[in-house]
Image 1 (spheres, protein in one colour):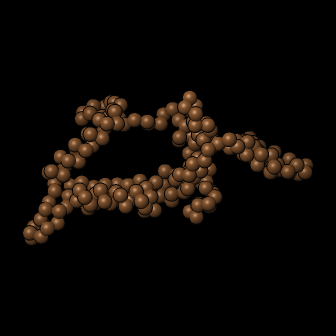
Image 2 (tube, rainbow, N blue to C red):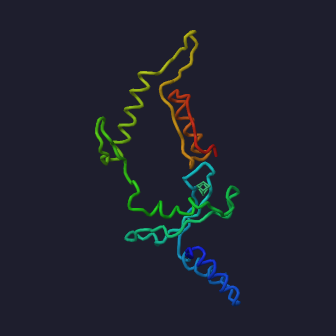
Image 3 (cartoon, rainbow, N blue to C red):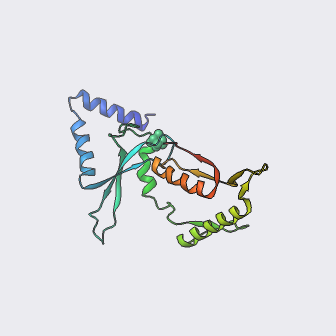
Length: 189
Ligand code: SF4
């Protein structure tokens, strides 16, 4: 049985053999898709390679217009990926425009099997409260030999693959301010 991929390959080969050049048509279709979009540079969130992407958004920024992401592609100016994306990165549009995407914090109470939506303010307040309580319990001013250490061994932090040098700099300021020593980052950009 002929697979879909073989069918397309055969179609392209036959069209080319007949003397048709499909490249202008393919380029025109792409141009049409992004002709009225706003472009935003970003970083693929999926893995530690940290490929740069250009996100194409349709919408004229008027108040009554909801912008829609219509295309995501590799950034040709990026020294990391030079315009390419892997099969996962190229599917980023489906990640952004997705009914199942989480848009607010969820909280699962102790012993519960159910995640419930929570307001951002409540989530931030709750996180801050947990950090404060944990720090109060674990902060050590001196080590066993009486030397000043001001460290917090019972709390750790982890960063994400879209964290830039600048974000990591600020995170370091924050964690050293708290005394946190343990930190890991997926990307090390
Ligand atoms: S495009 Fe692929 S290789 Fe590049 S960061 Fe995303 S997942 Fe990683």
